[in-house]
Image (cartoon, rainbow, N blue to C red; front, side, top):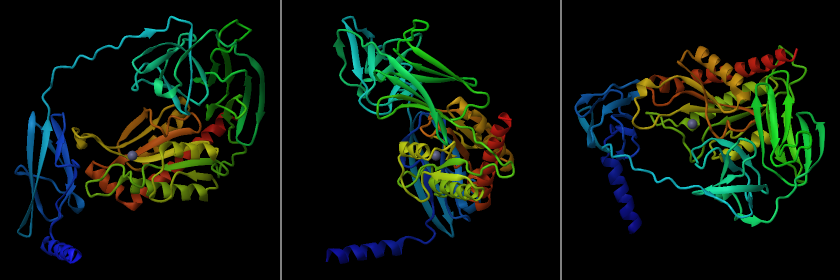
Amino acid sequence: MIRRTFLTLFFALVYFIPAEAKLDIVYPSSPEVTVNSPITFISGSSDVNSNVTMNSEPVRLWDDGIFVHVIPLNYGVNTVNIQSVHNGITEKKVLKIKRNKLSDKISVKQVPYIKNETGILTAETIKDRATVRSKPSGASSRIIDLPKGIILYLDGYQGDYYKIKEFGNNEFWIHKINISLPQIVSGKNNIKLYSHDCYSDKNYEYHKFSLSQKVLYTIVQEGNKLRLTLYGVKNNENNCNNFDYTFNYSGEILGYDGYYDKDGNFIFRYAKEPKDIDISHPLRNINIFIDAGHGGKDKGTIGPGRIYEKDINLDIASDLIKMLKDAGANVSYSRDNDSSVDLYKRTDISKNNNALISISIHCNSLPYGKNPYNYHGVEVHYYNDNAKMLAQIIKDNLANDLSIRDNGIHKSSFALVRPTNPVSVLIETAYMIYPEEYILLKNKYFRRNAAKSIKKSIEEYILYLNNQNL
Ligand SMILES: [Zn+2]
């Protein structure tokens, strides 16, 4: 009985929805939002032949009836009456967009720094990817992600962050959730370096440092040098408290990283330069990782016609993977279907496949409060200096080959570009919210040209590395 009532209700609803009901608001994603900006945009679609107005102002409809309309916002609640008229049928939607008054700046109480004065304060990292930062704040820059089991000496704390005892001029902070409960100890361990061995395999050169204890480390790129510092390890040569080792390379710096092996030895690893490059087939045997951004539950940004970024990314990535495989590359990837993949799982896949380079493919979004007509074009993100050249080549080619605005390359702390190994970049192909580019992104030929342009860029990068080694 209940089921029948539901069914009747369901059919009644379906029956009474007019066929022309097509007014769809994508952003803002809820009819009541707060946007603290003098303007914001409203995106969505309606029937291509309809007349759409917002507060009686005409709205421009693009291909397939999509619209991206910018409205001014006054302080308080702004009511936006959206109306679509088609074939004598009127659809209406109402948005309430709140803009808060500029309130007086709330004075943030400075939390004092509490220095440890009794004995030596020590703690151990209790999880992998324990992030060390430059300031006692989650917004400060990342120095390194430490593995579990590293003994740290602490100087004191401020709020939730402990300051790692200074070694040299550096300031290192770690959030308390990453470490065991700090304890006072009577003396400091005398950390020894027993041996330093070198070996290599097909993909990497390794330096193994055998230590009496796992220690904090940093690897810093300075031009074509890499400086490894093992903190608190006595260096007899200059009677310094840290062990410094500089690796010199002749050409472009490739992927590198540091980690502890299962026996507790510190391993510094450096990707070998591609050898025996056939200049007519430069991608042959090159290990490449391709990431299609978002996926599954994570849709990425949504275009005004409700096409999801995750699907566009996957399509470009799938074409690119095929092109690279056809060119003889060994390709690994985060996903080849619409599935959710954790960000760190993605970087793990690239490392486990010994990728020389990693490319993450996205399309750009915009937060509320921005004017989408001012933001369009291609940009490429990198984080480490060793990926700057690859970012530059890809960005130059995409801007040229796709004839879209060149928004430059940017140093950005994204999970997919933070690893120093492989050489990692993230592409924002074009903007999903800018109507002209959304229409381009919907076009299969445009997406295939993007894939072609990225493939060409990887070839140019490999040939560039090859020329440097001549
Ligand atoms: Zn994205």
